[in-house]
Image (tube, rainbow, N blue to C red; front, side, top):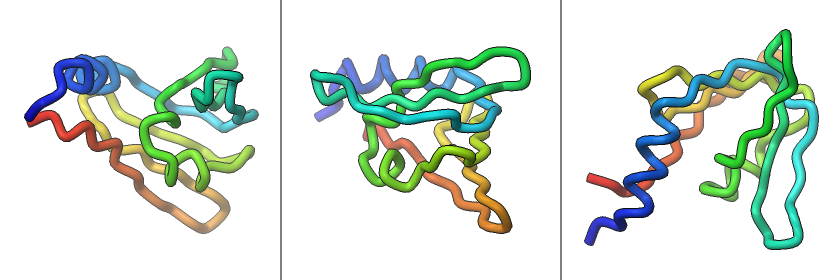
Length: 92
């Protein structure tokens, strides 16, 4: 069964463009995980890390993160390592 909230979150994420360097990551008192990234002009906050714990755990300060608009794929670059993570909402 498709979760309507998940489908709405998927649509929001697909519209978002992320391109920057992770400046910090943290978990708030409610257990929601975040990371901040610098895009060359501003430091922005993203909460998409909460959706996949392995993504949050893998992500490190200093990593470059790119997610193109219309995609659910995050590309993470760390030195010579280039990894992708897909945030799957199971919304079909």
